Length: 84
Image 1 (tube, rainbow, N blue to C red):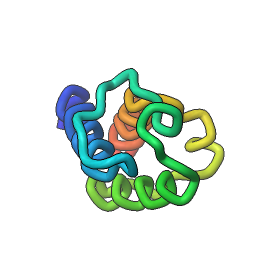
Image 2: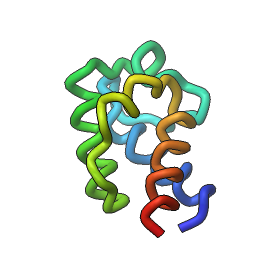
Image 3: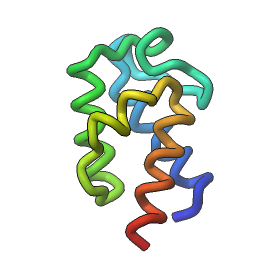
Image 4: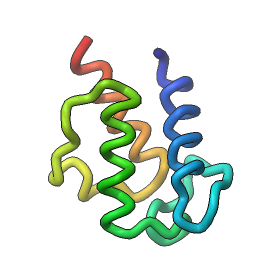
């Protein structure tokens, strides 16, 4: 899976799970401020991303810096490439 496919899938998942209702999630949208995620919704999102991309658990230290949809996609890309 290349980086573009990862971004597309991350955008789809975040949009489908959006607490404000399913929508198209843009790469520069902020997870909490623009899309309405709270800390519990972010934890649920992390679990779905781990399952979807077969990732190791996302650590709190990694998640703390995630602001935008693109930030999430870049973390997933990094974790996918690290296991290869």
